[in-house]
Image (cartoon, rainbow, N blue to C red; front, top):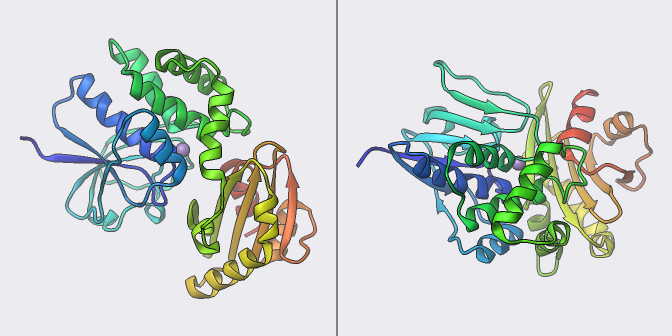
Length: 307
Ligand SMILES: [Mn+2]
């Protein structure tokens, strides 16, 4: 048996990270690569991803807690700050991603990065061009990941290739109405019931280093904002706590309403940077940004620009 190669997505894994890891392990087998490729996760699944895996009959990937001394393929991320414990002592053998690049490697590796709506789009294209057939379940999880990351094609990150691959995967998976399936997937994560403010904020939370300043940005996507708005004070208190405990300069929670296509930002810390970045007034630690849905394209670069 050859040495294991673990395929992992980012911490606080989302549907694209988990489904891309599973699909890429499958691709390696089907395309005839020798090696023992194992899909893994570096955190707990969110309810949306659990729903998707269950729907298409996949078990959750194994939990990998430390990457030191292991061969690793990164999907859906490349930065150490978003990756596994022991990253610097791991041997990263490949990267497949669609994010900004903050990666160093001392030797040439296979690095595939494209400005697409999801990692799953890249993998879907790999399957379509390199394999004879695509398993129905694999097509289903790739479709789900594309719909999840592009917020059912509403995010500004969506490209024609995402839509094209999604439609092809839907056909193979036997999903007739792609958009209503997308809403169904997003709804699985939308309820905040039973979740603490901390759980909500950390369900999809990323750390950034903006010119030496530590910024954390969480995002939830909802089909109805009422629950989140009702609990606003609780979220803001928790953001403040996270800021102090984690030594952040700024902590943000984006509550993105996928039906209204806008985000409520709740913030703690350097709120004036938010005002500067978005030319909007923050009142009571909160500001609504119309048409803003993508953390990656509509929040991170704008904020980074004012640090
Ligand atoms: Mn992604």
